[in-house]
Every structure is written in C-alpha cells, then in structure tokens.
Image 1 (cartoon, one colour):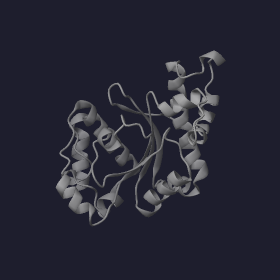
Image 2: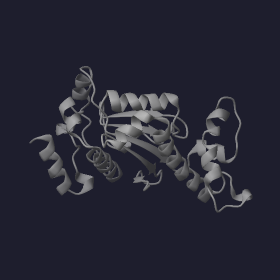
Image 3: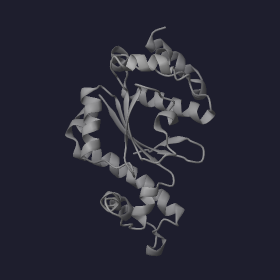
Image 4: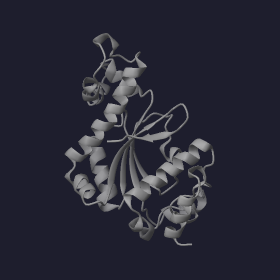
Length: 233
C-alpha cells in the first residue's frame, strides 16, 4: 500500500486507532516527506495524540528507526515546547526517532536560536508544520505572573510579560500564580503571541506559510488527560 493509500485508509478509522502517516511506522523517507501537506502532518500529529490519550501508541520500531536515522532525516514537523518534564513531546504525539524536530525552552517562547532552528527545519530540512505547544500549569508562566527574578531566569520571564499584560478582565490582586483562571489565560495568550512573533520575526517562515508550504499553529497540552487542543486563531 502506498503512503497516500495508507493515509486514505487512516481517515476512515477512528482517530485512536489511526496508523501513522508514513508506512510501517518508520520515519518519513525524503519522498514521503515531500508528498506530505501541512494539513496532513497536523492531522497525523493529532491522530497520534488521540492514540496517546487512549493508551494505544504504536510500536516504536526502535532498532529499525536507529538504523534509518544513521542514513539521514526527513522530519515532518517542528514543535516548540516548554522544558517541563511532564510534557514528553514525542510520546504526546506518538512519534518516534526521525519523525519530528523538538525545540524546548521554559515557557515555549521564540528566540533567535529557536527561530533559526525552525528555519533550518522547514526551509532546509523540509518540515511542513511549526507548532507552539503550551501546557497547563506552566511554571515559567506562573513565574512571569509573579514577576519572579532569579539570575538569567529573569530575562527569560521578561519574554512572557507581554502575555501577562495582555490578559484582561482581572483585578490587579487577581493577577498572580495562585489564580488558576488567570494563569490559564496567560498560558493561552503566551502561545498566541509566540505564534504571531514567529511570523513577525522570521520572514523565511512567514513566506513559507504564505506560499502554503508550511503551517504555523498553536496548541495546549492538558496535564490532566494528555490531550492536545489546537488554538483557533
């Protein structure tokens, strides 16, 4: 069965039972990667998350993947995540060696290093999707809400301050890490701002998206059930 036919068969199944986009649950070949569309990659990730939530993850095929990885890589997506140990990105999307690029920084914020990595992943290495993945109860966001100062962490949290300032509908005494509703709102806003900043700060990524070659999206991960929810723009 060709990768395309596998994808068509995948659509017909319930998401939790859906097989990965590429054949035999191996990392994409160059041809398979080139044939993928941004929407197909996004669906593949969300189907993988459905399997993860349902506890029906695919066979990791570690030995085969390690061997293939030694010959090169053709990942389909770049996911910018927080460093939080409770968010194991590859597992969250039921992906394995060679499937995705993962960039991690506290608070899932974009910086020059992350932007350059995204540009490499897409323009040079062929990835079709950039996802900013925030998560529930983010410690970095809580620190920004409380205006924590600690060494180099201070400068990092300053990058999240625009999201703290942009959230409306709360009195000053409600704007702190003890207010879950406020923290949740800042987490959501921080992802949205990061997505906007990626487009604004990277002409390479913005142009690739305009040309339909990639898609840039935001999403949130629930620590309660492991589910990823896309943020509608």
